[in-house]
Image (cartoon, helix red, strand yellow):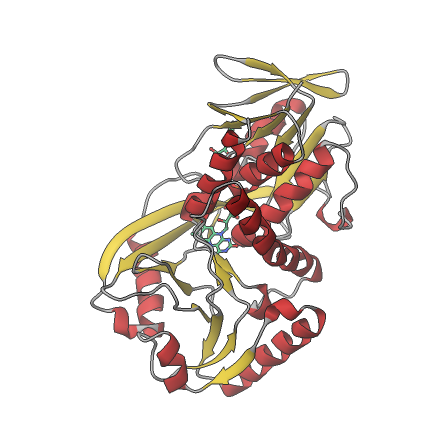
Amino acid sequence: MPHVVIGGGILGVSAAYSLIKNGQDVVLIDENHSGKATSAGAGIICPWISSVQDPDWYELAKRGALYYPELIDSLAYDGEQETGYGKTGAIAVSKDKNELNRIEEVARKKKQETEFVGEIKRLNSEQAKDLFPPLNKNLSAVYVSGGARVDGRLLTNAMRSAFEKLGGQVMEGKARLIAQNGQIAAVETQDDRIEAESVIVAAGAWSNELLSPLGLSLSLDVQRGQIVHLKVDEDTSKWPVVLPQTSHYMVAFNDSRIAFGATRETGSGFAYRMTAGGIQEVLNEGLDVAPGLHDATLGEVRIGFRPMSSDKKPLLGKSKKYENLVIATGLGASGLTIGPYAGKVAGQLAVNEKVDIELEAYNPFR
Ligand code: FAD
């Protein structure tokens, strides 16, 4: 019987890919909702200068960032080169020297633990503008070379393509869980029924819809994010991620594209629409930090529903009630960082393999 993974975002696809690499029989089911978070995510992978202070969050985010090079190598081995991953470095920017001192100190502490943080440098405004030309001339920066970015769509497509090449089966549609005798016996879609060895629920913000008929409930909310993509006539492939000290940021990609993000609309529900206030917010914040982008072309607006747990920590572990059920969601605003690693862990839990991390803090029913 196959292992069934429900959810074709970064987390579910990573779980499916790691299971198939582990020689398992795997079926991936995805409903492809509008607002899939992975398709809207900005792509910052830089826990080194993040303002989040929770050590449990940091542990997963760090492991997520460290796992990327291994994953990218594995995908290259499977013939997938176009992952959208780039170790471009990142700059934390501010007008306030004390704030930058604090960020630098935190980054140096993290570097004592992992070399991956890379080079840490203070930049004056001119040096910062050399790296990210449209930047506001009043901002100085802390640069870390270990910051990276990823295009969530490209990476997920690459993992899914490798998964299929290795014999994995992908089904489109809405999955439903069928429980029997303390197990998830099968997963049904409109047209099929699959008897399951194990089931991984990685259905993002929609996970409770799947679990509630079984009497299970996660402390999970949906948070809409609106993000604007701008086009410029320059090569932006080497521009670092820009992190002002707010919840807004900028991420440049290989195709002369820069994402300005993002709104954090807790309690938005699944309203898949852009709002006047949301777009105003991201453009105002973004252009304040990078006024040089005033004349950039407004490309598109992406909308995604972040799966937010109530304490902002991932929900990752096995169910006690159904012993072959693995829950993997709640990645919130950091899912492109944590998702590939969390998917690998979920795959290991599905086959009862020992994992290299203590999972108690992430217990999905805590
Ligand atoms: P999703 O990508 O939402 O995937 C869930 C999938 O499950 C969907 O395809 C859905 O259709 C499917 N599904 C649901 N129910 C069913 C069902 N019954 N049957 C079958 N399929 C089902 N993270 C970072 O690390 N860095 C960032 O810079 C960053 N920026 C972000 C910016 C924005 C605007 C947003 C919205 C998010 C951002 N994130 C970022 C967070 C990250 O994108 C998410 O945490 C991550 O993508 C969640 O992935 P997921 O696979 O859990 O969920």
